[in-house]
Length: 293
Image (cartoon, rainbow, N blue to C red; front, side, top):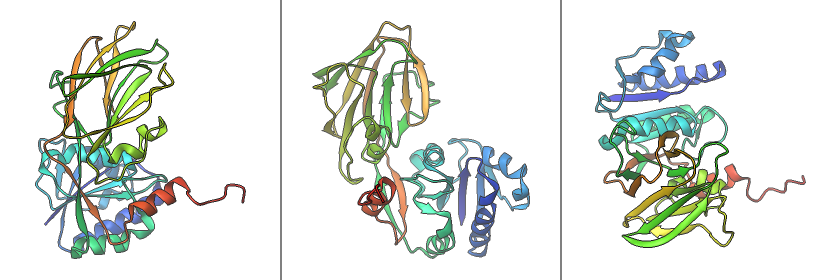
């Protein structure tokens, strides 16, 4: 059995929890593969004595694994998804920071979480991905999919952009705004939410179109079915603008056309027995708490 692990640098107070993960996985008979960047972090710290069986660099040499464990916050988990890609290795996020909608397992729960994982006491759910086409395949190094969202944004303090939007080839709207977010249900708790988009249950089959600071105040977020094809053309006075997938952004020239649709494969999330999406919402968003107390 093989467990792949990826993480970003974190503070030394997390080291005992990482060592615990290694002990639990090894005692359960797992070999451990780590990303090259995480290996470099490990070797520079007191974790350097942790046994590593395989090192992978990117999605191309990512090994066939039984599980992918992400150590860090939601950013680390989004990076882990790019390694897994169409291999669809089940992913477990362990939160080494504070706010984490995707990496929901707290470090204090690690011992039980790894025991549940190694004993098979969990379920796997599918999360849809958003894909962008119509651009050079090298734009995102062939990784043209995202778990949370695809965005079209102006650069810095440049003037607003105009995003001409089509739904299944039929004209929908021209968004005069700082940008436009096309979010998956999973991404409804991310950038779309901060722009006024709705919260959506993870198992719904929608895209959320959310304008960023729209010029016309009567323009509101909109849900569309995720089996549709969305087409976009961006205009603006600036010489370029930003297109992004999750945390990966690239500069693109105006009048470039894009097609956004649901990816053909999914991300498989490991849900441990204690996971409850509604409880996660209440905890992370402080619902039901009186801020005056």
